[in-house]
View 1 (cartoon, rainbow over the protein chains, first blue to last red):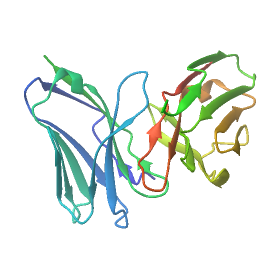
View 2 (tube, rainbow over the protein chains, first blue to last red):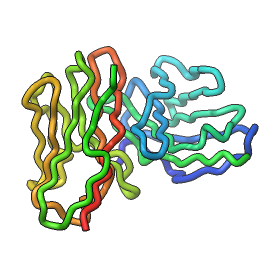
View 3 (cartoon, each protein chain N blue to C red):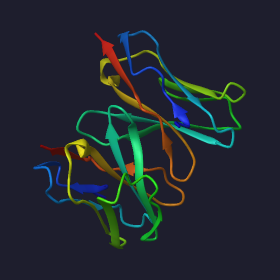
View 4 (cartoon, helix red, strand yellow):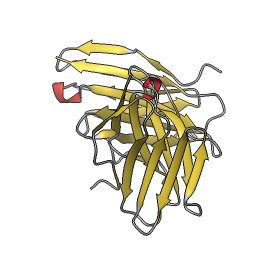
Length: 109
Length: 112
C-alpha cells in the first residue's frame, strides 16, 4: 500500500505557463516532505522541501504548498521552462524516505 | 567530492547469471540506501544500512537478492540467479544525519 501517491504519471505544459504537480500521503505522522527531480540517465536530485509546521515554501520559480488536513502537497513551477522537463518525485520524511511513483513533466516550447 | 559512485552504469546479462552492482557512498555519510526504479512501482526501497549495519531489508523482493556493506566506503547488491523481471534501474543513495539523500547515477540492468 503506497503511503505517498502521485496519481498523475505525466503532465504537459506550455513554456511560460504554470506547472502544478500533486502528491497525496496517507500517514499523518509524516512531518517533512521533499521533492526530487530526475533527468534521464541521472539519479534524482533534491529540489525543495517543506516542514509540516509550514504551509508554503518558496525557492525562486519553485513553490511547494502543504495542506495537512487534506494530506496533500503540490509543487508549482512558474514560469515553466523546457529545462524543467524531468520526472518529479514527491517524498515523505520517514527513515528511510518514502517516494511516490513520480510524475513526468514535459514543458513544450 | 565525486558524489555517490555506482558501477557499472549498464549491465546486460542472461537469465540465471549472477549480477553484482557496486556503490561508493560520499565520504562521511553514515547511511546508505539501495532503491530500484520501475515504471510500475516508481522508486522502491530495497534495503538500507546505518553505520554499515543493515537496518531494514524488508524491501528486498526475494532471497535471490542480497546486499552487503563491508566498510563505510563500499556496498554491493547481488542478484543470483537473475531473472528478466529484475530488469530496472538500481540507485544507491547516501546521507548523513543532517543532509538529504544524494543519489548515484544508477545502474540500468537488463536481464534477457
